[in-house]
Length: 278
Image 1 (cartoon, rainbow, N blue to C red):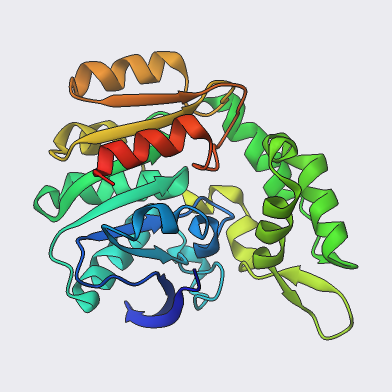
Image 2: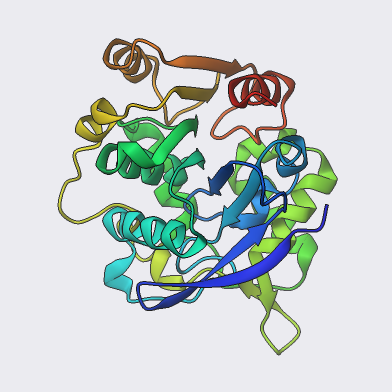
């Protein structure tokens, strides 16, 4: 399936979307993680697009979206962008699929505007982040090289620094790597992502605390959590609290996988399709 690439003006920036068609269906908007991009949902979308109008977003500063002020790479700004995008698309109500940072954005948005969210899939994330995983992400994101000699060097970087991808099919890893970089003009490749997102990695988290548990508690939409059994981001204690605060929470655990599942694993994919009625 070849999605339609389009741009939407939101809060002073041109933000990039991939539109997988079926505009007559209810909307599903997919939001990637800290260093991801809209293409990370390319393989999932065909499983949902028979029933849903699937759209995936390049969060500001990532993928083909415009770069913004370094001071605006924060969760509250990302939530404002999401609201503006949905308004421009004419989507009064939507389901959200959020991986890692995308799940944080989804929780905050759904807590602020519960009437606009139909269902939520949180991919290996909750209102509380395990410090072990946060330290690991800070290390590999903050110390990433600026240039690569070619795509194989990008793949090698992922294999060396991002252990979960060692279990991915090689073609999927190569596809993800290719969507993360662009030519530099001197024969090398560099990240599409704004370097300011990496300096510091806490650019994904606002300087002033955000009440993620408060937002989570205000969510009224049905929730599905997909959790990697080997995750170092979503702890079992955090998940237990999530269940207490949202008794209807559904959980699908993916064995042998860390942070974060690709959502193509049989356990993840079947749970998402059932949850969304596909």
